[in-house]
Amino acid sequence: MLKKLMLAAAMIFASMTLSFAEVGEDGLHKQPWLRLTFKDLREDLAAANEEGKRMVILFEQRGCIYCSRLHKNVFSDPEVRKFIEDNYFVVQMNLFGDEEVTDFDGEVQTEKNIARRWGVVFTPTFLFLPEEVGTNRTAGTASVQTMPGSFGKWTTLNMLRWIKQKGYEGEEHFQKFHAREFLKQKAASE
Image 1: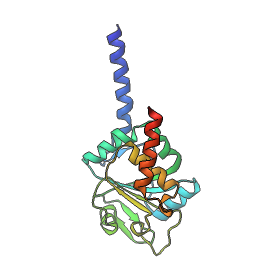
Image 2 (image 1 turned 90 degrees about the vertical axis):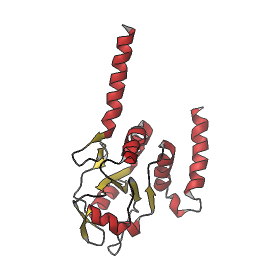
Image 3 (image 1 turned 180 degrees about the vertical axis):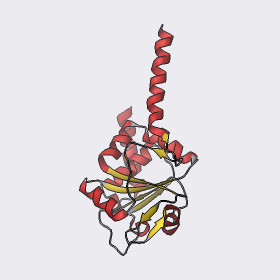
Image 4 (image 1 turned 120 degrees about the vertical axis):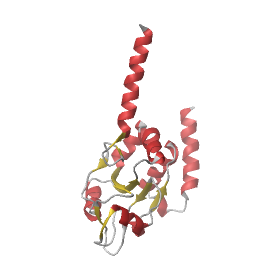
């Protein structure tokens, strides 16, 4: 009987974990906090500001093992998920996608062409945007920070915190902030 209960509990836990890494028809991982928008970045930024959140663009691609790892190992963590839900307006883009994107300067291009325009060549890549972007700028040039790659929970969470606190405006480099925060987080978990 105990084995059956343990097996049932394991199956429930596995299904809950996997639910945070579902893959859509476009081959990209889906999260409940990803925003479905018309990809007019001016409108998206206005909506993010209305909600008091920071806008971030997340580039992914079909079959990306690093994207999969990010969704399954980092975004599934309750602390990371809650921080994103509370503080970020996330617009997902497909590195090789054909959906149209309207940049801040009014230029309309497909996702794959806009990625090239902004110099995005790796997935996953996060582009963190400021609260205001002029009509003469692109998201690629306006981004306050770009994070290419799949990192673990603490690096990702600390980058999200650093952006929220506008650490990029201060003197402390992200790596110094991360090292200091990680020591606190490690001590708190012991």
